[in-house]
Image 1 (cartoon, rainbow, N blue to C red):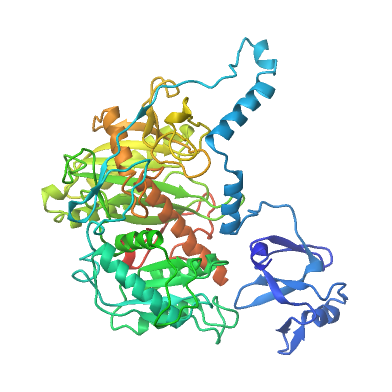
Image 2: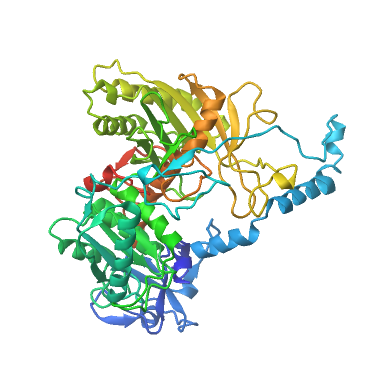
Length: 635
């Protein structure tokens, strides 16, 4: 109930002649007759007595909890019976587990969804006489389209061992390890300073040592990094001065800072064990403190695998091999390593994706929930190596609900400089990409002309600002749309893939249901696990590089196998996926500030996702700590 009431707008009814509006921050644990606070005279008094003395109001329900308003430093309590909740928009499913359960129950497989669609058409749409009055006829059957299934690329790991994906997935079992260890980020391929912190009261320090032995073994096995020291294991103190940890316990940020101070230099990575439930505010607080204030990489592990109760000397981590492999992929990416390479051919050794130096940008804008005036968060990511496996990101806050990226010029320029630096420096002509691919998410068809007239010139200005102004690489601009109602079904169930018999991964449709004059295609690059898969609709708005349709489609499909967090081809091209993750992280930074009770949210001198985001609000950069700025902190 405490979490469910956070953010709800209320009106106070006990003031005569007016209804003051407040924002609820939760509910008290104690009822009104036992909830104490210090009044203006410095005396402790209960909420029940205060309302009876100062407002001459005798509470009817003194055994109920109070609503918390104000800030965490100066909370204000109101009885439930003086609070009126007006009509407002509210996201009901705040809990991630409840959302996952809802998705599981409502997801319908291809057969059921197809049957439901046809039933709705025959029973309602086709029986409607209105279209016939205008000379229109609606066929009850679905449109048959021509489709192709692209051949997946070959995935290479260490020692040039390769795997050929089957059904949009592959397995690391039997592989010697990931492609390349993070030699630069971790000090000559060595992990000597790292820590494990438990934020779960059921996972103790001895359990962290057990987890540390497992992580050390897997990092050496999968990543190939030399772990030369045992982890420092700590837990969140459960008694002390209050904060966002346990009630009356240590503050989460103070815990992180306390652990970091024990190292001679900053740790290379901190593993954080989170409780299974009610962990969102802990996660947000960890990421905001570590990536903005301290400057240290973190990897969170949710305790849904039975981490607690083992004890040092014989306990088990509780993590299965697949989970550990996924964690290792994220850790390697965050430390600066390379998980895998892809090669579009069937060679025995990996080949380059591009014949010319190419940089791939991914752009996305994350908006607050409907009705909120919070700022929108714009994110831009770009690769820094030729194999398109390492990316950097830049974030900015801009006007509420604005889709165009205001600070595109500055962010693109910084990312291009990082590409230069990673490939020999700006003075080296070979370090300058000859071609630019820009994948953009979240743009509707009505905004296509706006992005061409607003964002393309910003990209050109960013490139021309580098050097003497003559640098002008060719640009291919592609919009990726996920929010549409098009679904693809196999005409013969035997051609389906997986247990749901869904459309196979790599299915591309570029005729029949596509635009007659524009350059677009549907690509289903992933294999569905549950429900009915949704293809991504790609629109090529500008192509100065002269790519053929086959080249664009095969390149996009190949890139979908380079997502660093899993061994599956993903539904959306990774640069856009990373931009979406980075934009979400920017909103999380601000959410942590809101949970802390700040009246005005500020991230790195800039307002984040919860700050004022009115239509005329200026664009503000979200500045991360230099230690994590040019790494894949969002992985």
